[in-house]
Length: 110
Image (cartoon, rainbow, N blue to C red; front, top):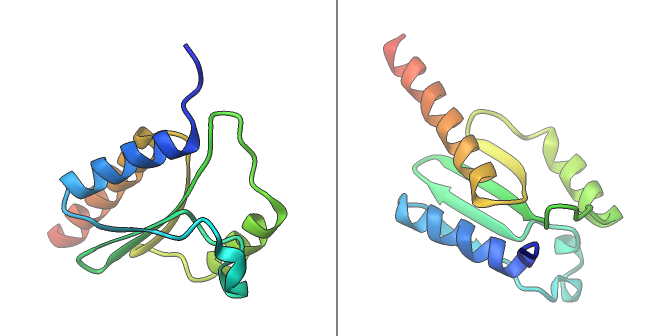
């Protein structure tokens, strides 16, 4: 069986997120037209006060230099409500969402 293409992985992730009530935006493939978006993640998803920034890669895909730079710049802003994910399957995203829900559940009990 061949490794899924990024666009197939991205479609699986978008479907998962939308089923769970996330508003998901796919950034244009030609981000070079607007310099600040060069290296930006493929998907941005919003639900309640949470945001997921998702870079989609194939199983053996590696991030380009501009993607690493963008991830490093945004990393100082990450926290309980903002997450940057390098996803190689929809399971990577599902695991982050599960972790977020566990964290939110613990906060509600306190």
